[in-house]
Length: 407
Ligand SMILES: *Cc1c(COP(=O)(O)O)cnc(C)c1O
Image (cartoon, rainbow, N blue to C red; front, side, top):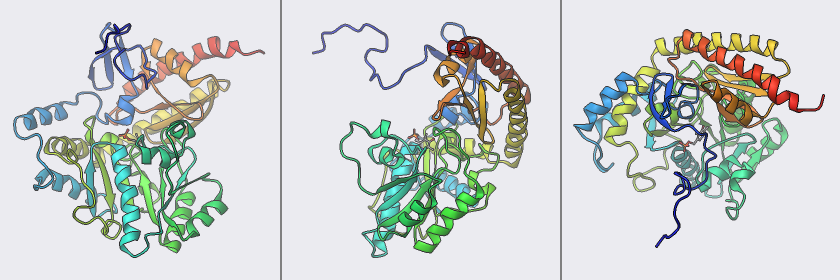
């Protein structure tokens, strides 16, 4: 029996998060309301997940209707909304087939298994290596942290899994050598890195990887869990270059805040995934699929994509203005569309706290970035409001954080 008395309200939770002192209560659009009455402009949105903002009326309506209709059945039955959502995802992409999951990590797991099974089914079971890159983030399962390769996520968790080759995106010779190895199976890459600091790959970089895959029989797998579903102003970030993958993982905005992930693939890439090779109890359940159809339906319209391009154009232009005004604070503006990274000089965690004090929620990122991940229906007025709070934040950062350093 547990005889210790709790000392803090969160005492019974694993302490894996350094949580901000905001006790959330409700949300509406771009705004998040705390229990103590504070109101925030939320540019975190569950980390790029609430693509339509908090509690979008159409999603609320869908959830209410579906709650009275059907929640969960096993995938041993046909689920019409699952077939419908898969059809839409395939119509809008390179893909022929989809497997639905409950999270991004599970979509990555599916892609990793698919890659090995693909080669195994073609008589090449020795092809197991997946090439991944510095600055990548692919999730938190045992395989996903090994795929991401970030030491701080793999350290202390026992032996590293075999089958991952972790390289720098700039080291073309090493990437070429790894792709030509007889054990190579696939290349896994984020067309726009998220947690890694919002680095958008160039068309040349994607072309280089595609050509290597074609020349050596590897699968090219894009992780669009964060940058997909309209965030960059196209449905998929890869569509800016037109360089198609064989496999694509997505999640985050796909359910508009409801947990849904998906692994998309060409029919050939998925050819090893025959009955019995993979499965999920909850993945693709009727509740998730109903919400997904509404969220994806809204976010994939041309009007939504046009809006993202308009607002992100405005936001980036204004951010360049801030960079010119705060050259001592802002080093670089990165990312694509409404996946915005700002590399700053003062500590990013401290700047996030300053922003919070002013009523603005922003996300962190590697390479001392902060990320702006607004809902994709953010209005120009809301963008202006957020920029005003950001300007105040950088002003305070200049006065309080930079002055700490010796001059
Ligand atoms: C968030 C994220 C994941 C992991 O998704 P979860 O839903 O947290 O499991 C994987 N890859 C990328 C690029 C992500 O942004």
